[in-house]
Structures are given as structure tokens and as C-alpha cells.
Image (cartoon, helix red, strand yellow):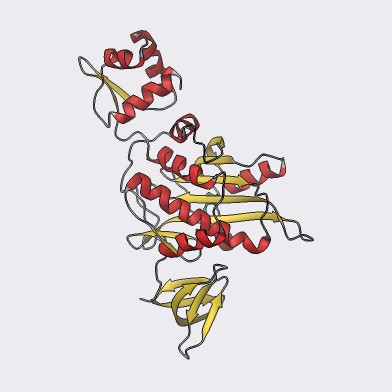
Amino acid sequence: MNTKERVLALLTAGNGTHISGEALADELHVSRNAVWKAIKALRQEGWQITAATNRGYCLEAHNDVLSAQRILQLIGEPIDCDLPDIRLMPSAVSTNQTAKELAVSDAGHGTAVIAETQTGGRGRYARAFYSPAGGLYLSVILRPETLQLSQITAVTAFAAVAACEAIEAVSGFSPQIKWVNDLFLSGKKICGILTEAVTDIESGSIGWVVLGIGINVTAPPEGFPPELREIAGAVFPQAVPDARNRIAAELLRRLLPKAPPSVADVYAAYKSRMMLLGDTVTVQRGDISFRAVAEDIDSAGHLLLRLPDGTVQALSSGEIRILP
Ligand code: BTN
């Protein structure tokens, strides 16, 4: 870590308190001039650091700068996961789109595209994904050594568990998964996942996967647009210092393990976080909708539904919603 990163780490650990230039310099064994230069460089990157006479520097609580360097610093030097190659963009049309273009140009496993906002964020069924400032929009390229097309839903399940754990590690709140790939907190959707992959038709093996994850870390100050107001929520009501960097770091660490978990382990963790199990749900599939009890998921991630006539149906795609 260089002096700038270490100053940032100390100010972050200060949690909104002031730390004098002298204390920073002593702690880091550098000159006060070096501390001042580091503060200046951090401010140029957008970090809001105030200075008060006789009290020192303070990282403002509303600071919420996304920083590739900071994310890498938070990840540290783990032995159990690969380090991401982070491409930070102030705005992207869609980070999945950028990541797919990079994958086609041979970008490696672990290349991660992160944007402050998206102008054309996409979800499943080509729906728009609202992507204002304050959210985390991240797409990571995976190049699994051995993955068959039939296992691709396990990758989405793996990402859903990773996103739950990352959000929980930073916020203390425990999101739940709504089959297939939505995360909910307090009854509102806070995260969506879009998995796209290129496969070799003949062998059925996967060339690369782009895992796109959008998290509403904070609610937009003006609120969600009227059409989303009933369903969309956020992890935090307002900006929390460093939250997006911390969630990104926790997420990337989990998405890039050196030893990926087994499909069985992925689904066990997924199931333990599932919402609606045991509930009567309305299943919508195209124009058809019917009622059933969401009983379980099977070893391939299918949702097992108990129909009113007592039979069980395995649902491999579709959308379920809670009955009013
Ligand atoms: C859904 O809710 O159906 C999935 C939403 C996925 C959104 C993420 S945000 C990052 C990445 N870029 C996109 O355009 N989509 C995914």
C-alpha cells in the first residue's frame, strides 16, 4: 500500500472522527508534507475529506467514491481467491455489454467492469434495469475450466449467494433470494443478477460467463420512479461511507475463489437463503399463471411446486410472485 492508500485506510477506520495530520504522519512513519500530498490526491479522486483547525482530517460520512484501488486494497492479498482486474467506468450503457465485448477480445478470468451508473442496464427478459448513482453495477468475466451448459443456472445461484453474503458482511442485513435470481430485503428487491455465457454447441462446454450484478446500495435521493416504488428497495436508506467499495470487494472475493464450491454446496447455501419456501405462490409463465406451493429446489436448481392436485412440477424457468 502506498501512503495515499494508507491515509485513506486510517481515515476510513476513523469512522467520521477527525485525525490530525501529525497523528497520521506518526502512524505511517512519513512526513506531514507526505500526508498533505496524499490528502490532496485523494480529494482529486473525489474523496470528501474536510480539515478542521486543531482537529485534523475527517472522511465525511456521505463519502461514496467508487475506487478500483480501494476495492483492491480491501480485498488485500488473499490466498483463496484470484485478484480481479477492475475496469471502473463513470458511466456505462451496460456493464454486461462492456464485459462481453472485453470477453470477445480475450479479456481474462476475473476482469470486472464496474460503473457508477448505467444508461441501458438490462435484466432478464431484456427488461430495463434502473441504474442511478448510488448503486453498484458490476459485471465479471469468468472462464471456468470445466463447466457444462447444463450447470449454468448453478453459476447464477452461486452469484446470488455471493451477493447475499457480501451485502450481509457490509450491512449486517440478511437479504433473501427469490428464485431465480432476485435478492430481497424487507420485502423489496435490492439486487438483480443477469448471467450471460458463450457455449460451444458441439461439446456443450462454456467458453466464458459474464455475471452481471446490480445492487441498489442506497436509494436515489429523489426516490425510485413511480413504476418501481412498490417493488424496489435499497440496502441502506442513505449513503454509507465506502459501502459500495466494501460490497464490491466482498463480492469479488466470493466470485473468484481458487477452489469453486460444488454444485451441491452452492444449492445448499442458496436454499438456506430462499424466500417463499412453503408458501403458496402465483407462478407466471408467459401468459399462463397458476397457484402452487413452492416446496423445494432440486439438485439442478429447479423450483419444485406442489400443485393443487397433489402432483409436483419442476420449474426450470419462469417467474414467481407472492400472492397478495
Ligand atoms: C434482473 O433483475 O432481471 C437482472 C438485473 C441485472 C442487472 C445487472 S447491473 C450490472 C449488469 N449490467 C446490466 O446491464 N445488467 C447487469
